[in-house]
Length: 84
Image (cartoon, rainbow, N blue to C red; front, top):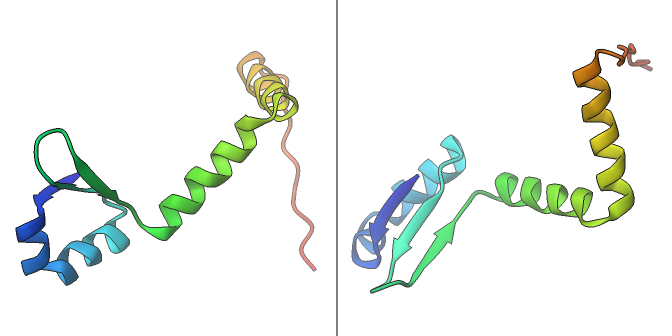
């Protein structure tokens, strides 16, 4: 996780954004006492949105919990993907 001030961010914006996108870093820009902005890559944002969607429905949450339980009990199986 990176932290900087708005002034330093302005001075080297390209470098900061390159680190966020290439290294999946999270950047926090402090804007005064107890305020700030968080910058994440688009890939990270999309991943967070997908995760939020998956756990937002009770049905999906139960399905995921069941899959985790099966893995812990060792009652899961492996399946090969069909490539076309």
